[in-house]
Length: 376
Image (cartoon, rainbow, N blue to C red; front, side):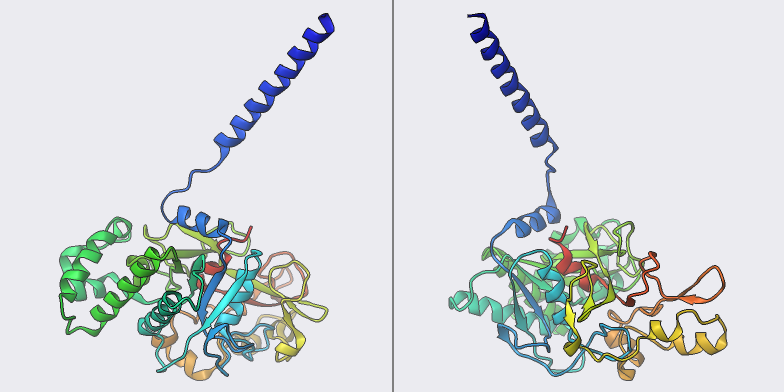
């Protein structure tokens, strides 16, 4: 009898301990709110990501393929792939299925109407049952406006600031509806804003979230208006996640931050961009020239080395570098070919700070933080 009682007490004690531990674990589960809750729901969904962007590596699942390239992968100042090809690759690191919708450029300028057209076409595909609703649409383009520009279009009395912008979304949307009226506005930007709002509202009703960029303007006073009208903005952290990246726009509208710095490292067969020692972009996808890092690593710091280095940007196309108004969100200063001096006073390309000689390139931007939202 004594042994049975002892066994029962031992069993009950074990059960109580297990329940207590389970209670502690349950209590430790984070409670997500706001945009973080939306992102958590997206990441737990079994539905795929849909990347809305430009693609050149292969024909996207929907939309168009382009012959233009936009991103230098191997650091030789020659563009290798399109913006969307890189975004899709990063999104895939989460293990989620990723499908692609290829945008078509109608004009040189990258404005909000291109994104609106893409969102509208996706809505039509879903309505016509030609596409299943994705967990989220990832669109890594920014329709960036200064607060002052929004005041000009919607009213100075909005009094938007970096501190209150997060709390004024409903007020801004109410004013947008008022300015748009029943027949539209004489201001084309107001009409574009309204198209964004309607598309984002419709997608939300379909159960589809839209994740977008905070923007790369080094500013607290510039906002991606897609975030004002219903999209979730993502800001960028440095490559190790230790701090907010300096180029990332920061205000109370943005509460979700993920890694925006991706370092290209040379591995057998191509380039690895997430340091897992696996090929992400194969050699036959790349230009394979000698990287700028390899050309200047170890050289003394003087005018002969600084002058040529200073001309390199994330985009090599001369027209893109000149037209900062059109491409300002994607041309970062200082260059993505970032050198520093070592103890001996010589140039060293080491953005990771680990002295790894395989580092070839650093691609940075809130663009790349967007597809990183579900990556651990």
